Image (tube, protein in one colour):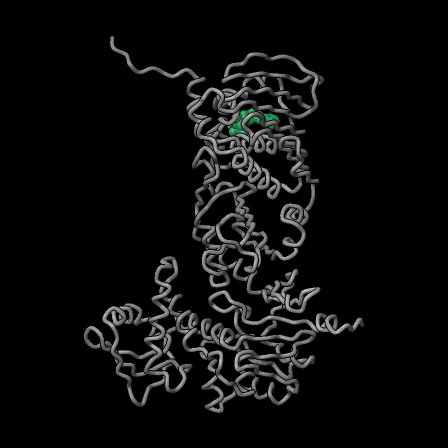
Length: 597
Ligand code: ADP
Ligand code: MG
């Protein structure tokens, strides 16, 4: 008989499985914390030493275990959370695979004390390398205390693989922080090398967020909540100003489980779109609640990856909820003049997130401090003529504009042919004319891409333009979108194009150069492969067609510009993420001039 195949002893199998479940000290902490939460703990303390290498000790006041359960809990596939396959389709607990305790015990020295509320006496159990060395009655508190010493002491490969103490500590901190955010109702203590790192009382989510991120940052976060019959979305969004290089501060929770999902994170960035500068990522905390039957959490032993039954609709909902929250928030930076030095003037985002985006309807009200005279212009429509130049030059001001200019007495000033100054309520708005016009044109371009029929101004003298053959190839590639914008272009041979018509916004005299300018800018963004070509075109078109710094504007042009700006979705930032306007408050001025009342 030749038999080379053997069934591995359980202790060895556990050691192998441990490789997937317990990759580093932080994974052990995560599993122990999840167990405590599943056991209905209200208070949780986590002690670690040396980044969790020499000690991880988690104490909870949850359900505890009977002696029988305690002695079996460290076996592989021992779980109280599921019993049949059907249960797997409807997981409401954080754990369910019955592997964590077995895996942890296989690669460390564990001591557990546990007692149920109804038992007078608890149980103590000691396990070393997966083998039980002691099990006895023990007087102990209700709940469970698990000490894990010398993780990976018997798996040198894994032990040598560990990073520095501070790196391992950092990973553990992240795990604890995620649990703190997803379970604000928990009292939570985290102590590392005898130093108290976190000591959080059970609190509301808002308070917990403030404790974790600091009051100042927390106050600037934008809260949002959306529900439909399928799922709920809620959370906090960082203002673009606080975004950081690198994707660190992102928290995505599904039914209170921290998950990683590239797609859903991407939905969030998409919603921020051009609010962020290149390479910057916003802080966000996003909670998704969903019927557990609609999602599979059994994708990987670490349970951080999930498979949604209908990811596309969650993606769309996340995108639209966050867009909505951002567009209705005050993202306008406030100019604060430094306390002791005038030259310290600096930009600061306001530390509150009241939705104060002026509505198209009551802009005149803002301006004049009285009710708008009549039903004024509705929200931007693609057929509106937004062009600063052409509306005014053609003398076809719409009714709103006529009314506004007739009623308005407060003045607008253009300074250095670059900025427009405008008093609004108790603030002074300083608007960058180019960025403002860019924003208007950008949103208009995006609307046009989705519309049938185009707005083009036929040229009396078609322009023949020579370009490099690679540029002409780009024109050819994006021709449908160029046409939607309002260009009428014919392509001849390898490097000649003829422009017959341009969008109405293009200034007279620029018809011959604008296409080349747009293509040049379009190419600059080429390496951003995730950005749609139409998005890149909208940006380069708006930048090149907008009024420039240095262009003098008439009063009527300024009025039209500002009026249109406040009809846009996001009037605060230009498509590249720079601010469009900043606010200087009257109280700040009063303070500077020493007026106390
Ligand atoms: P799982 O959590 O996937 O069920 P674990 O190996 O993590 O598997 O835990 C095995 C079982 O031990 C759990 O199902 C639970 O019944 C019990 N258990 C583990 N930790 C605790 C705890 N802190 N309090 C009460 N019971 C616990
Ligand atoms: Mg578990």
